[in-house]
Image (cartoon, rainbow, N blue to C red; front, side, top):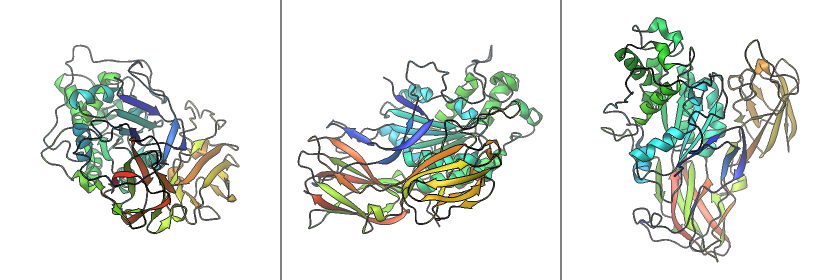
Length: 513
């Protein structure tokens, strides 16, 4: 069975896509998950998530295929000759910060849906593959695990600083179960990335330390650090936010020492891990998918199911604390339609929005700088911040010079100001904020380069259960709400027959100040 869908991101855009839809099955009918008496209701799922122009890997793909190109060599390199197979050995505490991951892998997810992994980073992340490792290994260790869906976004030498923007526009709208980031950067930038994820998702996070490279030779036998990574500082950031830190560099080094191998034996050039080295890193991550001596949190602290309250007018109400709520229900031929209200307001009055990936124009400059190629996804604003009085619409940034000047135009607002990529910018209407620290390699942008993105509401206006009788589904009603207490109301518009099994609430472990 092909258990992994790998999505390598090239051209993301908003779409309306169901999170899950299953026919009546023994799994869906499991009393463990259907503990409460079903209440009649109806809902329509209009999920605001990002979908993407993708390349999909399957069991037929070569194991070294990587459709997002970065700067690593393409020629494969295997295990060092004469060396034993690498075996990753977990410590008792490994896995402490993966309670939700372990619950889902051990017990499965009902109704059935994929377990979603997002990987963010540089060519180091790219070389970990397209998810084929997880497709092969997870079923061996967890026979009840759901299908694995793997997404990644990588840039040449992309540090944590810029990944925060990609997390905002790609990962957070997708609401994954697990995020892996394998790259370099400043610990402060890793902290900002973690905070972005912790405030907006319930995903577990894994951060491995970087592997040994030729540039680290002077540190061999003297320090655990890399030339460009303070391992202790990265470890401390992960500990602060209950992020699963993988001591991959330590274990990589022990394998080299135990077998009298030089650093370059696990590399395919001066910095990039070989295929065998990449599998060692993956196995170090896999070793953390286990039941530890204790977990740092209870799964229900972040994800839980609650019962709706039926109102006298035939509608329904639920009070919850979190930033996202899904509905689990069953369709019927006579299912009704219900208006969604959050805290007494209809969807079009709720100031919660998703911003799509900032898409570089197809004709953007690719001029080389010396021997370094220019890749449009690397030379672009990676993150957009929303300001005040936001109006959902499409936006275009157009470079007006070769020195960072640009104009921004909204499809409804019109021309909204002129800025420069090297300076903080707030649009004339106050809707769009662009920060230099999230615009990568702006010095390579040229006059005429364009970047486009969409702003959409993150709450659906109504839900309907009209459809094939007995069809179970999960619908995302709202996400990226302020992470505090809310009241959800479903007010009947057309009929009131429906079946609701539960509302599922998602409460990220951090809140905005």
